Amino acid sequence: MTPFDTETGIQPIGDGKYLANLSPRWWVQQGPNGGYIAAIVLRAFTAAVDDEARTPRSLTLHYLRPAVEGDAVVEVTIERSGRSLTTLSARLMQGDRLIALAIGAFSLAREGNDFCDLVMPQVPGPSHYAVPKIPEHAIPIGRRWDTRWAIGRPPMQGDSATSKAVSGGWIRLPECQPIDAVVAAAITDGWLPPIFSKVDTALAVPTVDLTIHFRSSLPHPGLADDDFVLAVFRTNVIADGFLEEDGEIWAPDGTLIAQSRQLAVVLPLS
Image (cartoon, rainbow, N blue to C red):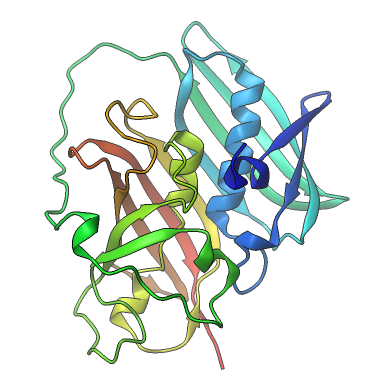
């Protein structure tokens, strides 16, 4: 058991319910990171499907309110299980407070015409970059990822803002855990939002909804436990106080692991 296994762990308690314990190590400005919640829900979905041949293909969460540290219950319903596709829904509860709603799809692999027109960004490997120094005042989640900034402008470096909101780099857990679907889900919301590369205004961007599409079998063959993956995120629009963020997670050999899209609220900070 690694720290990540413990912090995202679930325990079946009957009637499709799974007990989790939300760790403050994954906190952002207020409450836990959305990717952390996604990882916990995905564990519950995987346990409910209970079929190694049916792997996660899609996961969508809507975040209703911030959670608090401590126990939470994932209430899972298998909406339909067909010959190849299982669809599930879940409610993440703390007492009588509904924290998040989720829906997921698990499926057998299907034969067909495979192609990928997306291309992995060309950047030097993780050993090319210096290990970033974590500020003393960093939010807790800042210590839960081992990162090497490779794309876009790191914040608070005194550089001018970039013309586009694009950022990313190499990322892994500090405990060097194999990157399975649960870790990949956490990574899709694990990078500093790219809007901070474009604007210097102090902002909070809490997630409203997050959708993850898993695009290859995980753990990916050839990925060692201590390997990094490359994550890149883009924001193209802010309108009416909301922004979108699109993400891609790549294995070092150029295989697309996952894609994500989220909608977030833009909140100025004093």
